[in-house]
Image (cartoon, rainbow, N blue to C red; front, side, top):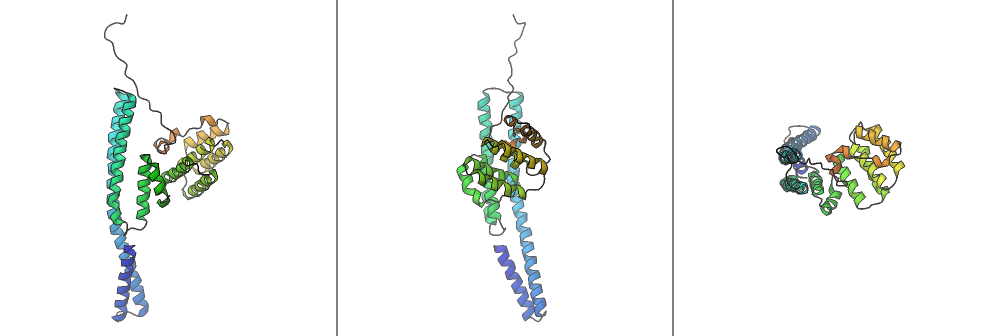
Length: 273
């Protein structure tokens, strides 16, 4: 990384300058060189992190502003629906697609910082993977996954969902699940536990799904987890549902949400006969 190399160069120059200039003893020359290198690295990282955060904020703002427009459109459709409901849903999906595509294009502006910020290339790959996943461009998702940082529950869940869709061995899916939830803090794993239990139920392994939900109840505080655990404990696997996770669950594209659009009934003037 450029920041590391430049910081080392600064440290070496300061150390040599102190030594050959009889400013300090050999020990203190090395010490001042190390201090100078660390200070140079810290200042450089502070600068580039500030630039990076500014560009990341721009991408987030695009998503926030776009989601507000989409939500406003959804509210209108729910309260005053007109036309074909399926056509309305397709229009909303197109709006969402344009928004995600715009955000995806904005990630190109981060590439100039790759040589300066450690692990930035993997962060960008993770962000792009999530955008492509939302666009259902799964070939690009699979291409990016090996370069992604699996640090947040959504990225982990997307990888596990792809392993399921690609019909990878269930043992491999369980291994990835176990490694992932071990890295999550308390109350962060609701999505991963719910996904793993859902996969096990699809594979007709109800007892294993029950065990996963027992672990989920121990490591999370979530009403949906408690309800699904109760359903499995009482031998009602068909009632298991992750719909309560909302957008987090449906973002995995394993199930489609049920969209309820109120229909307006025509009002007739006068008395009916």
